[in-house]
Image 1 (tube, one colour):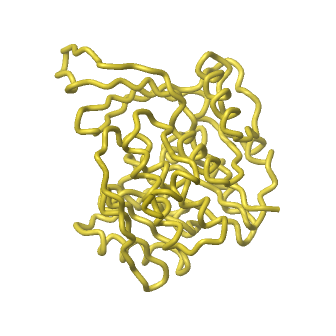
Image 2 (image 1 turned 90 degrees about the vertical axis):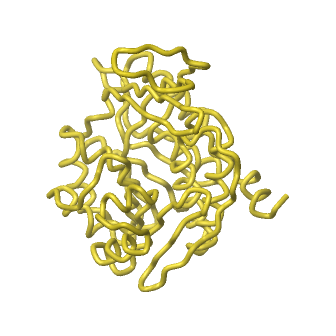
Length: 307
């Protein structure tokens, strides 16, 4: 069986609004544009599928209008959904505010995706070649984290555990994080997240500290914006070049990077080759409006080749 991406995080619906500046407290501003888009974990999965990696969503999705949007988007991308819609609750909503600098801010409401059961996770038979993706956001959901940790501890040998801390996980000290750290085979984050999590001031220090906490064979990938990314495995650290572009929206760029990285690794590429393609994917993504802007494999090929 070919490798699959099994995504355990959260798919939500984004209300994406572009504006000149965030309002002050109690203020009001007019947005230049607004649109509903499926986002959250969907961005990672869409990137993986567009680059040839079979993908299964193991999270929950609601029975309302936002759940309908999420399911339609996943079906369009060819993402398999392992669980039935949760009755009595809709999929959550995130308001994404995009400034002219391309920086984005979020206001989120948790819906059905904040829960998870052993039966949900048991709906898929995990194979040793699969990649199981764990989002840091899942660590914050009381109705999900303990079930997820119990399941991760029972994965078959060889299955990869990919961890993206996201912006809200800022320390390894919590007991849940202590349980996850020994299981991680691939860490993927941006530089700011890695520095905050490790308490370091430079990427090389963060990589060193993460390597000390994780398995000896874990692959560490830390994105460094237009400079590309840094990868470390074992005692070797190397920089993988980026593709400088004019960014108009950074929303979803890290997700595009993670999905294309996994697609490359699953196809047999080396870590450096997969990271280069991931850098190209992120560069293309930031030149497009919206959260799920990951390019296709052909588009990544063209940028890497300099076409």
